[in-house]
Amino acid sequence: MRQLVSIKLVALFFLTVTSAWSQDNVGPLARKWSVGFDVGYSESRIFGSYADFAQRWYGSQYKRAPEWLSRKAVMADLTVYKKLFSFVYIKSGVGYTRHGGGLTNTSLVFPMDITLDYITVPLGVGVNPRIFKSVSVALDGGFCAGFELSSSQDFQKGVAPGIPQTNNTFIPNYFWSGSVLYPINARCAVKAAYRYVKALKPFYENGEGEYLTEESSKANAFSAGIVYVVK
Image (cartoon, rainbow, N blue to C red; front, side, top):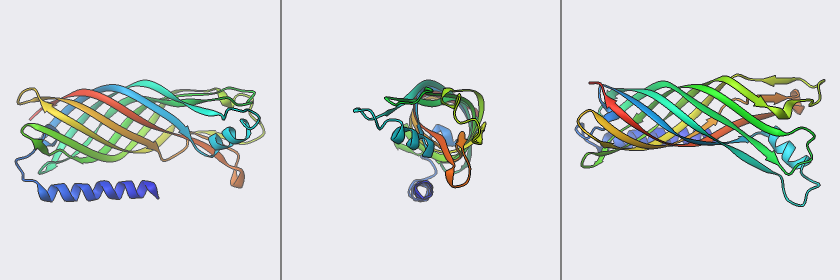
């Protein structure tokens, strides 16, 4: 439900700003074709019913509550932007990101330490109006496919071998992001951005039916980059 509300709010924002601004107030992401490269910092966390189960049951004997640790990592994106109309654009590309986390202060025999490396392919729509002289802002949202490169899921070792377990290596996500852009010249601009990503499918499933538990990931990312207007 929250995911649908977020998507509806982004759509409403697009409709509002496209009707309020003129055609001339266009940022570098909404030109005919633009290419951007971003490098930044990502911080992800694990969530889901298996995570809740481990935190609740395996941490009960400790005075200090168990705590999920975030996974901090470098991320990078190469993105292509294509103008649709006015200052509305679509974007796609390829990127690298690392998700995961760990659980401390529990009585688990096996460590809860998860690292997931993904190649990502986003598909989104956004707006990039100018707000003050040549400075512009961008807001976009959409879906992102995650293809697992490698993973380290130490918590699974020795966990009830008779219970069905599934590791999903293709993860669909939804995302939204916001950025500020400042032009260096007619073709290049620097960019500072924030992005939120949340998985729509768990990377790990344990059990089946009413006993099914699962784990997914979500992340916040901060990045800086450069955008080049091709034409």
